[in-house]
Image 1 (spheres, rainbow, N blue to C red):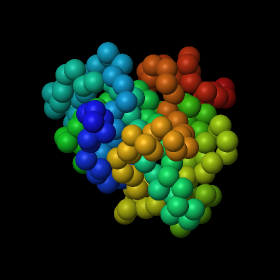
Image 2 (cartoon, one colour; image 1 turned 90 degrees about the horizontal axis):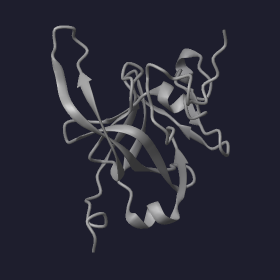
Image 3 (cartoon, rainbow, N blue to C red; image 1 turned 90 degrees about the vertical axis):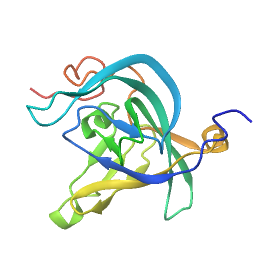
Image 4 (cartoon, rainbow, N blue to C red; image 1 turned 45 degrees about the vertical axis):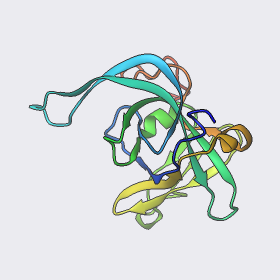
Length: 177
């Protein structure tokens, strides 16, 4: 049995975080590939030094079990920072998701929002979001090898390099002037 098959199945949340400029994943995700790129990550407080150097940039997968249909869906998170056990929940940058042409409707219905979901541009699949306090999220777990090889897959983010400071070059975000 290879190392990928032996990974323990864990559960968690994938939360939308508009302050993060890049998606960050923890050990709930299954790493599919390393990009050979690294990032320096700094905190949200000006006086705080860089938290970490050489954070790996990876391609990862998580499983979403659709509560209504029971369908097992693999969510691909490309160009993500890998923090392992140092990150409590997976953090998803809504603009990085939008950069892949997906629609992020993160306004809760109770605030007059629409669908409170992520809609995928490829086939119109809509992933409903939940609320924990004021944080939008969807429940996830570690995918098995079988699920990665056999279940429906959706890409949350672009496979090409993500530069949050130059999003107009390689993303599918339409900029209206």
